[in-house]
Length: 122
Image (cartoon, rainbow, N blue to C red; front, side):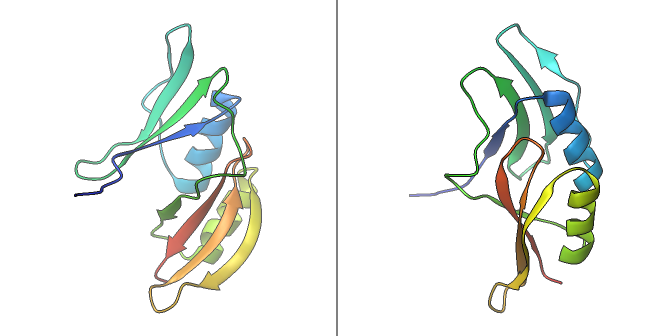
C-alpha cells in the first residue's frame, strides 16, 4: 500500500491574521481568500508533486496544540526560522534540537494556536 501525504489543511480562527503570519514567517503567499459563506480558505503552498497547504477558517474546525504533529522542511537555518516565527507573532515552543543524523528541528506555535515542527539540514 502506498502512503503519501497530499494535502495539509490548517484550521485558523482569523484567516487574515494567519495568512499574515505564514507570509512573514515562511515567505509564502496566499492565492487569495475564498469565502463561500461556510468557510474561508486560502492555498499558500501548491507545488506539483508536493503536498498542498491550505489555511481554513470554518466553524467547528478549531486550531489545536494537541493531535497530529506536522513537520515542515525549510530552506533557512532553524535559528533564522525561529526569529522569523517570533517576528511574525508566533511562539517558539522548543529550541533547535538534533534529529539524529538527518538534521535539526524545533517546535513552533502559529498565531492561531497550532503547533508544528520545522526541519532543516542545517
